[in-house]
Amino acid sequence: MKWLFPVLGFVGALGTFGPASAQMPVSACNVIIGPNGAQVCAPSLSSKAFPGTLTNSVVGLKTTAGIVSLVHCYNPNASEIVLQFFNAAPANVVLGTTAPYAIVPIAPTMTGGWSLSPLAVGFSTAISVAATTTANGAVAPGILPDCNVYYQ
Image (cartoon, rainbow, N blue to C red; front, side, top):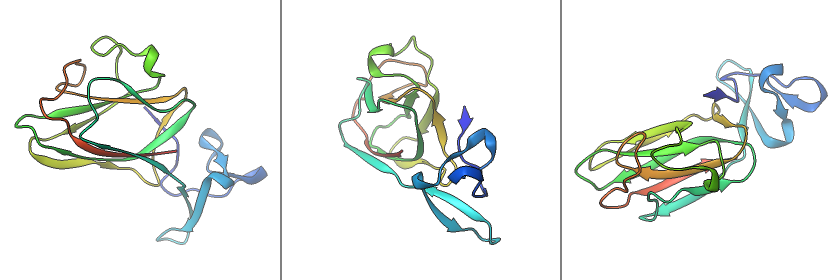
């Protein structure tokens, strides 16, 4: 996995934010002051809601490089489900064969996920997601989860 944003960064040269290894245009950030007074990049995010619609059909969130910084789901099933994220367009993913770039397990009958803002998982090609019963599987959950994914 690649981390696109530092926890505490700085506004760099030529209108960029962060160290050279992870610079992004300041225009893509909401620059805020962190707890120690350092400037922090809080990216402007898009969101996609999947109210009982995320399944084992791979869905494209973004067709170009980007980040995922927050995932939140309710799993109504009696067993764990897994959100699989891919650094590829849906047409280039075969569930059960293509290795996920990142996974987010959600415990049975629980709400869960992760938030990495201002950190984020960087995707260099595209952002796609599917919900399955295992980390590398292809089987859809018995009851589809309610999920929100925030990305840029």
